[in-house]
Image (tube, rainbow, N blue to C red; front, side):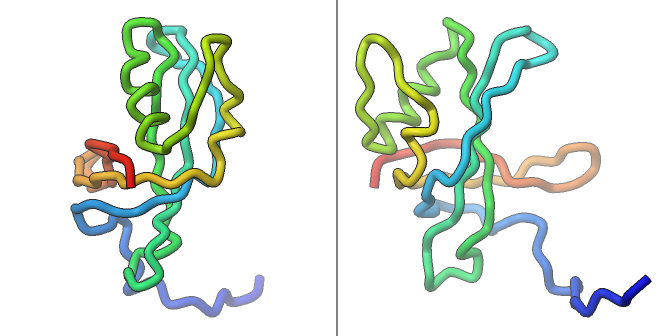
Length: 121
């Protein structure tokens, strides 16, 4: 088996807490095992060339459960995305930008990124 020539010593698992300009780079509709409702798992990429975290991936979940749609609405408004009363295609949100507030959260003994808030650029 070949040796993989990478140094992982300085790789950060989490970004520093704070606000970051991000671009929506992916989306996937999944079903929650707990509630049975679908949700959208948005893939975001930090889009700040001067930041050490430029290109870092973050994920944000918006539920499609009727009582939780306010988070989806806030996310789309922060992106500047316009929808109509018939709905929207989630892939049409790709390429939009927004700012996200990142905090740290412990999960199964490890710190991870958690998006606490979103806002328009």
